[in-house]
Length: 361
Image 1 (cartoon, rainbow, N blue to C red):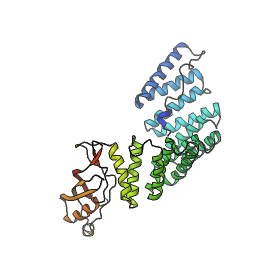
Image 2 (cartoon, rainbow, N blue to C red):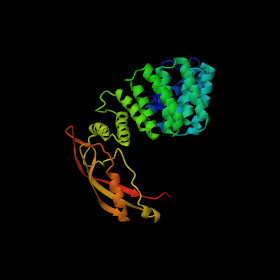
Image 3 (tube, rainbow, N blue to C red):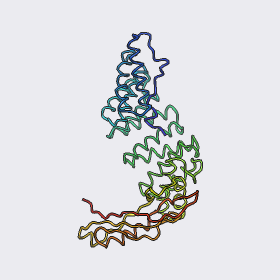
Image 4 (tube, one colour):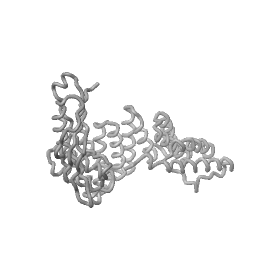
């Protein structure tokens, strides 16, 4: 589950950063700037840390020269800081320069070189990003083999990045290779394997392949300590996606099981708004569509102990009354995580949802 933020402040141990040939004032300036960068980036204050990352690099070049791994590390930190600020054009320039440093110092097959390629792939919005990804994965495979945990994590990381940028066709292959490598090398119960399976399931559901989504999301649950009592957001999201997948395949009893798991993790209070796990788009009344009439209906209902909608009724209508029937019909198919009280699911009353009928502009 690699994350760019986790690689910030990578690289330089102050215990060996001193250079005997550097002047004391220059070394002191470097220690001060780099220390400020470390503290601010650790606090995730990216705007404030950027200038210190840049100054550390400039002073580091004076102390070490451009053929030293410390300078490559400083350049990488600067590029990653720019990514955090979404300054992608500047970050690309910085990371390409970082590639050159690593190429000259360690060659084009080092793990550090591969890491920079991965980050370049994530921020480059052009066909070249696939080339960066392929090169990075090829280096990882050569250094660690396939299957291996390192290869699986790298391939999954690429797939997640592509999935998040809506490049679903490209994402599937990387996600599948990552999951397969992790399942073989780390085992089905590994959190890394679960993370890969979760994203494969997420990809399948976004492609409306409910059965395939169920297959991988159920595999993701194996990696959780107690699937019936989720303890983190990935687990919670896995259950939420399974509610959708089982609803879409007509297996409402299995959807209920996962809705209950979400309810256990998310105790509610009376001030919180109920959010549906599954929503259904209402059918637009033909006459209103022809007349290009818009409107909305506020539907009030109860949520039973299994998360089903019961007793829906329209309490406020904006526009034609013809919107009422399709609004209620849609709400009947909503699914919710039930409320819990003292560890037991309870009925929730007076829940409201606004159904909007709007035409594309």
